[in-house]
Length: 384
Ligand code: SF4
Figure 1 (cartoon, rainbow, N blue to C red):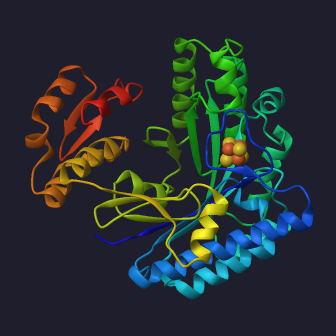
Figure 2: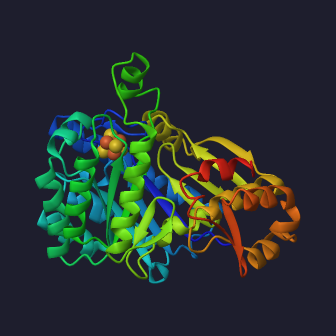
């Protein structure tokens, strides 16, 4: 299988949000230290690509995704020159989608113009909420006005593929606050919306508050209502609900993330990044300094490599593709890849889930039903 997707991890943010357990760290506050640290990290990323190229061809790469962290915390010249480096190493004429994640407050008209000129053609803006009290409580470093301004600036500078990230099910978030955020998102008219229900992670400030009974979350019924409101609002406004947590205008599915959801091969570079190729999953060293040390010594920065058996790959393919609401698990494709129909392989599991009304078979595909979408985790458990 070809490797068609390249993920680049930038592990720096302005500050740590209270719910976040991603591999991200506040970047130094002093301008000189900050610039030097970012430069050293970008040099390590370049080195990782050069080392990769000794073993793996990147000629088939079609999508690039620079995520984090907050990539746009880096200076414009650093980001542009990194893209120039990528252009010199990849077959850039094949690139269909190059996404950069951005946070409000770290973009300007000049930066957005330069990033577009450098070759990015999709931007994913972490607005999360459009309620100022909520944003402050989450520890976000921007307010609702800056979030809306970031989307407007992207539009003004010619970006035609804008995603916004939203979170629901937040502590103290009322259904009214959520409905107001959705109403204002519709006015911003992004091409793509990613929206996840909050999951409390134990190693975060909110995780600690929750275990000390200092954080109260909305009841399950309220969270379910928020999910239903999200789905109906976006569908009524012309969006396709194509993945459990993702909605898009026509033809604006995320090509990069679709490669993950189809369980195809991808490469990830940067601290803590994961890759999947040659039937193995690789995890890079998470600690930024140890990651950079490894590359300085000329070693690929792998912390762990896991061999995936065929059984593992079949099971992962089932639950990843079931995430794709409109595409689902294509039965002939599965059979072509693994030599067995998913119906023969998982007969009992599939029958049970059909009887429960959580999945159905239509034509060549197995898909989640409307009832199955919010219960997707229960469905996935059957294939683990
Ligand atoms: S901006 Fe994103 S990656 Fe950075 S701390 Fe907040 S949630 Fe985490």
